Every structure is written in C-alpha cells, then in structure tokens.
Amino acid sequence: MSITIKKYTDTDSQSWDTFVKSSNNGTIFHYRSFLSYHIERKFVDYSLIFEKKGKIIALLSAAEMIDKSNKTLCSHPGATFGGFIYDDITFEDTDEIIVNLLEYCKNLGFSSIFLVQAPQLYNLRKNETLEYALHWHGFEAEETYFSSFIDLACEKEVINLVSSRKKRYLKKNFPNEKLRFEWNGDLDEFYPILCENKKKHGCIPTHSKAELKKLMVLMPENFYLLMMYKDDEAIGGTFNYIANTQVGIIFYNMINYAFEEFNPASFQILETMKWAKIKNLKYLDFGVSQLPQAENPLSPSPNLIRFKEQFSAKGMLRVALRKNLK
Image 1 (cartoon, rainbow, N blue to C red):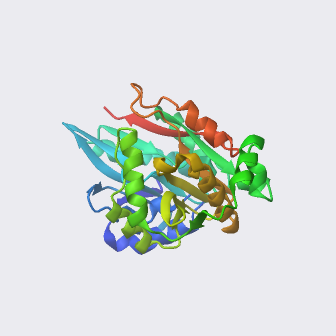
Image 2 (image 1 turned 180 degrees about the vertical axis):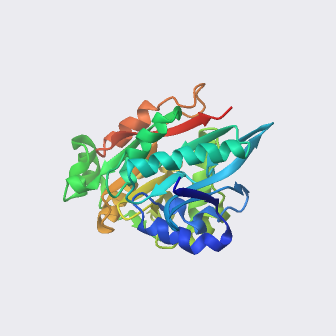
Image 3 (image 1 turned 90 degrees about the vertical axis):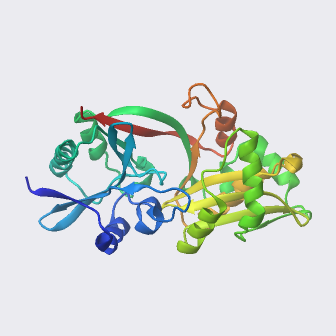
C-alpha cells in the first residue's frame, strides 16, 4: 500500500494547519489552535495524518475515548465536526485510506471508530466519494440530526429570504429608536443571557465564558458576537462563527425573556444574515433543531424548525457514523 498513517505530534502543527487551509472541506474546527483551546475539558488527542509519497493527502482530527474496557477513536469531541479533511481525492486513495485506518485501529486495540463529518455544505467543491467509501466499508449511521441552513447566494437582498408575515413584522418594528445592534463582542453581557436560556431548557452552555473569550482572542477573524439593546439594556445576542470561506454558523441565538415582546431572536437573525452577506459567505449553518430533554435525544423540535424556515432555512442532515471493530 502506498498510503501511510502517522499519529499527529506538536511538530506537525504547521503542516497540519497549512493543509486544512488549502483543503476542500476544512473548517475552523480542524485547526490546531481551535482543537487546543479547551480550558475545562481535556481530551486525549489521537489525530492522524495520511501521507502518499511523503505528502499529506488527508487528515483525521480525532481523540481517544475510553468507556469501561472499550477504546474508541472518536471525531474530536471538542469540535462540532471532526472526521476527515481532504483536498482533491480519488476513490482509489479514499478506499485505501479507510482500509489502512481500519487495520491501524484494530492493531492498536480500538473497539470502534466514531466519525462526525462536516456536511457537504462545507465542501468548497462537491465530493461525496468519502461518504460512499465509509458506507461501503461498514460505517453505519448511529445518530442522525435534523439541521438547517440558509442559502444566502440565492437572493441579492437578505430581507427577500424572510417569509411575508415575518417580513411585515420586522419592517413594522425596526428601525426603532429604542432598539439597536452592536457587534461589540461583549461576553460579560451575553453570557448571563446564554445561561438563563439554557437553564430554561434544563441544560447548560457547551462553552464556559472563559473558553469563548479564549476563542475570540485566538481567532478574532472567525468569531463574532452581536448584541441587541433596548435603550442601554442588553435584550439578546447571537454568537457566530465563520467556519470557512463559504459557511458561517449561528451557534448561539439567545434572548432576555423579559424583553420577549420585542422579538429579539428574529431581529438578530436578520442582522446576522446581513453581516454574513457582507462577509461574502454563501451559507449560514442554522444548527440542529432537537427537542430539549426528549426521551429520544434525536427528536426534532417542530417549533424551532418552523422559526428557522421563516428565514428560508432548508433541512440538511448531520450524521454521526460508527464502525465496530470487534
């Protein structure tokens, strides 16, 4: 076989990031600076580098996860997406990469491989060769989430992406001398709103305030926080990522429920759509729409999906795959 595998070490950080930057499907979640930002959560990094004739042809951002006696090679749990990063890859090379990976993991005593690939939305050039090859080699969908995205490129003016009823409401209530937006990155004002929102749904934020601050310092061109105010009081905020050159992510869209009557959630989404258009992004990833605390964690939230559809959001799948090795 002509493709070799080696485990990532810190001496590979520059070549790793260079490949991610030039790849077809790399995102901020794959850069080493992002993978090392965690403060309160520690992971055993087990990222892999695939080389052909001494050149990188693919990367796998991953970690070792141990549950009882079972050891899993897992898409890096500190990132929304992990999985394979590649540029222009053939079926032959893809097939060999997966065959080598399976053999490599078996030899090291891994009981399974768990992958969360970035959806095709993130591919700069459409290519589903890898997805086919994974299924061909027995990777099966373990978790399938309903996610949404907004296609910004299909309209010149983002207001035209908003449903007629929602558009009338937004135009009627804004501009308003009492309401204003600021892209000020004020986490001290945003984080309490985020915590209250999560508490309302019986959960806690994925990130600590310290982690969000660290990300904004590490990658200031990728993380943006929009705040909305009534007079001088914060009534909501939206934390956004620029994932790669064509996709932005609406990660947290939160409101102060004491001001729910002003519908900050909708105004914040429209303002984020305008911002994304200015940044020349083609798509906004609107995230998954799962029902909090449902018996089945994959249960969709019809109300949240309906809200997103008012901004022309369409459905896409976020699929987690597993291959058992024993």
